[in-house]
Length: 124
Image (cartoon, rainbow, N blue to C red; front, side):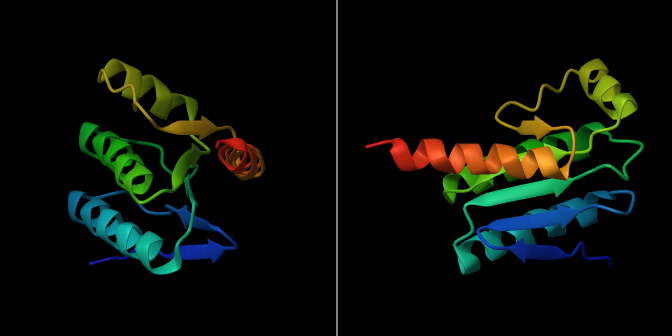
């Protein structure tokens, strides 16, 4: 079984999905990411899906689930690099990815996470 690497960049975990996501790979990623957030105390997760050309409903739900798990563990999630065909497919499948923030690319994703951190720091 293939594992997707999770890299730490300061307070952010970066996941770059370079392979077609099979159901078991997606489940393993979800478990690995939850453990890594808990172990490192990361407060941001960025998932780069720019290499994915096809996303099925299971992977779409998994992205939403990862975001929910991360939120419970006090980390915000941003999905970056979504191809137009993937966005169209998700809409056609009726998946809105509630709670999942998106950005065009990694640079904008990092800016979004920085902005979220600043907003969270201002909250009483």
